[in-house]
Image (cartoon, rainbow, N blue to C red; front, side):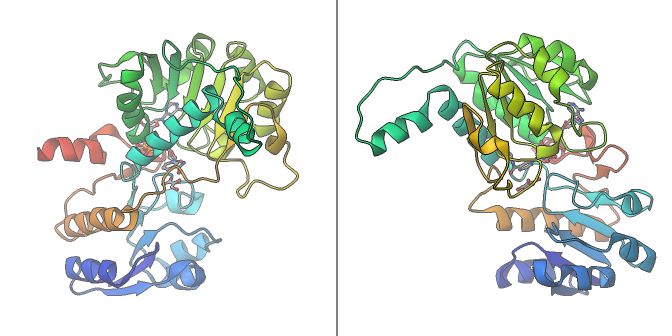
Length: 330
Ligand SMILES: NC(=O)C1=CN([C@@H]2O[C@H](COP(=O)(O)OP(=O)(O)OC[C@H]3O[C@@H](n4cnc5c(N)ncnc54)[C@H](O)[C@@H]3O)[C@@H](O)[C@H]2O)C=CC1
Ligand SMILES: O=C(O)C(=O)CO
């Protein structure tokens, strides 16, 4: 069997994968050779950022399992892959701490006017500027998976009131006041001072925040997107910021990445943009390799994969999540 890798492994990671899959040939394709080598894979672990010939890969009939090295599955859940029996597992949970940290950095930076203070600092100006409070705010979280749940832990001490929506509205964390079904967005939006997007990108969520939803948000409310850019219709977001209806936006992800030089978002008022770094983490490759090795052992033992994705939905069910696996291990 041949395992093809497309995440930035080093020799020690390859050695660990080899130990977990003794009889397999391991090929580190990297981004440079993934399009060429994926059709030769029995098992694929990675996140190709270049176009991959999925119809050819599926037609070759060789691929038996995809382990994504990303939590977002939009890079590999093409119609061809969804239409096969090939199991797909996600990296959900591996980056949740960092995405929560980054969300807090964006949110607090925006509310406490940090970019304006940095600008003033550069000019050696010691001036007071208006700031806004996180404490006491009503925060809506759209998507209570690994990232959304970790974010509720981190937000809890800030004396906010949290409400959330999720596709599986169960196991409400104690710190969340209300957990609503995914189609109750029109209840969440008008109620919140801050709305944070942590849902996956799929046919249902693409463009879920457009002019109509932005108009439902409270005047002065803030939108934070740490999920995927296409959840939001970016031109509508810029309109809502320019009109002053929204009080600000913080985005780690944009419709097109890198954000095009001529995008209106660059100049939108009260907007913080980071270049999709929410999941950056010192131990990311080590932790991803841990998850892959765990799943390799389970795969060869004929056991159910951790983070097995429901391909129809595009994310793992709560029962298959890494969170449930970890809870059952304790
Ligand atoms: N900014 C970054 O660097 C990162 C971004 N991400 C993005 O964040 C997303 C979420 O990551 P995880 O929490 O790990 O995924 P996850 O798979 O653990 O959770 C997704 C959650 O969203 C819920 N959901 C699905 N459709 C929904 C809808 N229409 N409305 C509300 N909730 C819905 C699901 O029930 C699930 O609980 C990923 O799909 C990925 O696109 C993930 C990691 C890093
Ligand atoms: O894991 C993901 O989906 C990411 O976006 C990481 O950068």
